[in-house]
Picture: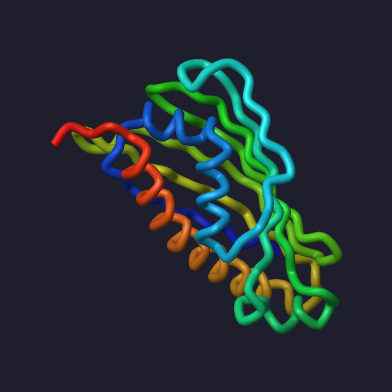
Length: 173
């Protein structure tokens, strides 16, 4: 079974600011800190935020209370997400793909992301991800729990992204 997760968040910053942020490893560290920690395995950029790409791979532990019981029983040592994002950067629009793997668990997610202009001087981060769990009979229940956990994480990340953009961009008052 597969559960589709679509989410979007608006930011009072333009796409160019978001593109610069995506190219900065500190931005991704700030996102991880919002979700309870983790580490950047790889951050590789080519070109510039005006015309380039970035690939970032992060390992992010999921707090014990957010691990669905059906998955928790399969794991020893906790649940860690390995998220790979690949972005094409531009000051007008950023497009990306995301893959999430859960080592030692039958859970996988993949999808697309975009940052596009929204409103007069803002942008919207949109994510469309398919979550797949290959557990017979309980798969749909676990997918729902994983999707709920991802929604919760994106709310926390949204707050930290906003703080990072506010602190690292010049805005007219």
